[in-house]
Length: 221
Image 1 (cartoon, rainbow, N blue to C red):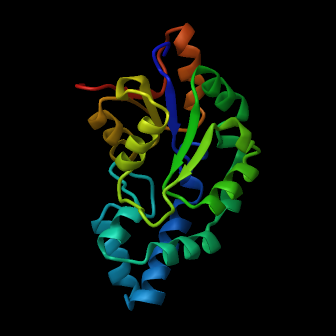
Image 2: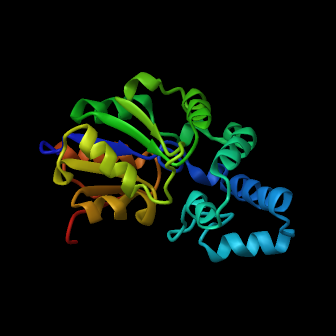
């Protein structure tokens, strides 16, 4: 970790347990397709599931954003809709990542919150789990006219902005395809947490190696 100069951390499923509201998020996507794109309920559910978007936690889950972009859906409209219907009140604070753990990460290197979610929802989540925005050097949302289906473009932009080489960067998230794979392809490292509080065991292991419920991935492995 002494070589890490930039840490990018995901929000949904990483700062809080996504199982608390994943079904609610899935239903929001279904309802959006029904309301604005003339899907019926069965077809909407099937389209999402076929694109690895599920009403339950799954290792191969992918981002709704990527799928909607591929379908040519207006991202500004979708972001507004999901911000209005985001079920952040369902988050269980007792299972969320603590502000203390995030401060420890921020002591290692600049900590950037990198998410496909909207800025409005970021505020809702941080307020709900009692985490100050000031912990993060930057909050970088995939919410602009250049919205991309992959975090890889955003990671490249942040590496350039902070003048950091890929091998000096670490991505922390809960999904391999979304949070780890893009960083590994760039030549950086990634840490996948099965649960938000697994970060505590990772932080403990830095100085006191022990078995913990954490998966880490590195270039070429």
